[in-house]
Image (tube, rainbow, N blue to C red; front, side):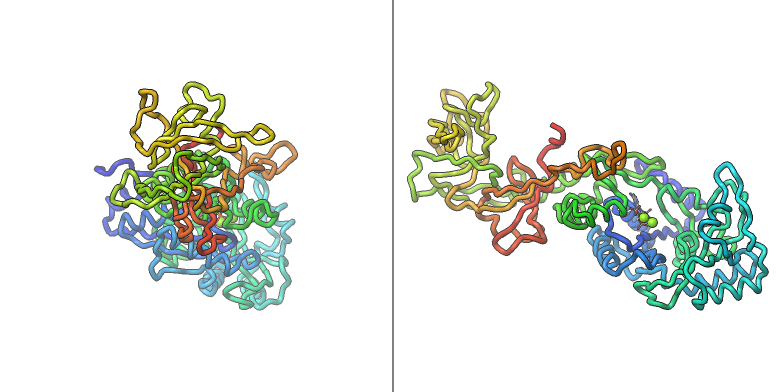
Length: 549
Ligand code: ATP
Ligand code: MG
Ligand code: MG
C-alpha cells in the first residue's frame, strides 16, 4: 500500500500474497521463433522479468516452437541475444516447448482414455462448417462418439505416420454448443509431415498452441502466465486442459499489447517489409525490432525506461512514438559525449586567422558533466558551418549568421560576417568573416546572442551520415487506404543519406558508440557498415521532437 501506482497485475499478485505469503512469482516469456523480436515483445519481457525480479521470483525463457513450418534456429539465436541484451535473465531456465512433446502426447493419451478427446476425420473445411458462429451453435462431428479403443489406435497410428497431412486431428471433447468458440472441440494435434528445427523427423503430428501453452506453463511451475488480450477468451480452454489433467494450475492474466504510432508491430508485416526490400533487413534502423532499435542507437536502459513509463493496461491503445524518442533522448543526454559535426556544410573563411597557423582549442566533452574532461579541437583559417545557420535576408529574430551580423562559434570565439561570396548561379558559396577569439566580446555594444557549431575544414572527416525518419507517414499505418495496403503508408523519405563534415576525433568512434552532435541530434556509429577509422553514423533521434514541424 505504501508503494506508488501499482499496475493491475501487481495488484493481483499483492492480493494473492496477502492471502498466502508463500506464493512464488514465476513468470516466463514465450516467443515463437518465427521472426525477430520487436518493441512489443520488449514490453512483455520487461513486464515478465520485472515482476519476477520485483517479487524475488523466477523468470523463464521458453520457445513456443510447435509449428515446424515457420520456425528456424536463426530466430532462436537472435531472440536469445535480444532478451539478454534487454537485461532479461533466465539463469538456467531456457526451455523449448518441443522438449515437452513426449509429455504432451502422454497427456493426450490420458485425455483419450478419460473420454475427453477423440480422433476426428473431418477435413479443415468440414470442421469449419461444423463449428457454427457466435450466434449459432456448432454441430457435433460424426466422429465424436468414437470409442476409446478406436481413438487410442488411431492416435497411435497418426503418430506412427500412417496418415497424410490434414487427414485427421485429435480434438478435445468439450461442448459444440458453447458460446465460447474456443471450447467447441478445439484441435489438439494435427498431422504434419515436416522437419522440426529441434526434434528433426521424430514427429509427424504437432500439438496446437492451445494444447501446448498452458501445459508448458504447468510443467515449468509458472504461477502467473501473462499474455496479451486476444487470449482472454482462450483462458477457459487453458484452464480446462489443466483441470482435466489435474496438474499444477498457473493463472493466466491478459494485458493490452503495445501499439506505437507510425509503426507496424505484427511479425507478418515486418517480414513483408524485409522480404519485399522496403527496408534493408530485420536490423534496419527504421524497424522497431529490437535489432533495428539497437542499431539505431537505442540502449537497453532507454527501452526499459520506456516500458516502465507506458505501464500495463487492460485496454488496447496506441502509444505516441514521441514517448519512445523521449526515453532515448533522456538516456543519451546523460551518457553521450558531445562532438561537432556539420550535416550540410557552408565554407567560412576566417580572414584574420593565418594560413597554416590553426588555433588549438579545448572544448568540454559534456558541458553538464565537467568530469568528462575536455578534448583538443583545431580551428584553421577555413571552417564549415551549417548552411541553415546563415541567412541572407534574415528576420530580426534570427540570431545566427547574417550579412554584417555576429555569431559565437562554439568553444572558439566570435565571427562577424563581412562578405558573402556567391557562385555563378547566385547561390551562397562561401562567407568571409572576421574572427575574435574572445567569446565574451561585445559587438556594437551588445552581447552576441547566437551560438553555432562548426568544424575545421582542413582536418574535417568526410563521413556518411544516415538521417532516419519514421518509416510511415500516418499514425496508424495498419489502416490501409481504400483498396491499398499498409505499404501505401510508407514514408518515401524515411532515410536521407548525406556526407557530413565531422570533427576528426570521431574517426576513432567504436562500433555502437553514441554521441551528441551538438545542436543536431544523437548519433551512433553504425555497427554493421562502419570500418576502422571510417565510421558511418546513424541518427538515433533529433534533439527535440520536430516531427511534423
Ligand atoms: P506477432 O503478432 O507480432 O507475430 P506474437 O504474439 O505472435 O506476435 P509471440 O512470439 O507469440 O509473437 O510473442 C511472444 C510474447 O510476446 C507473447 O506472450 C505475446 O503476447 C507477447 N507480445 C507480442 N506482441 C506484443 C505486443 N505488441 N505487446 C506486448 N506483448 C506482445
Ligand atoms: Mg504468438
Ligand atoms: Mg504471431
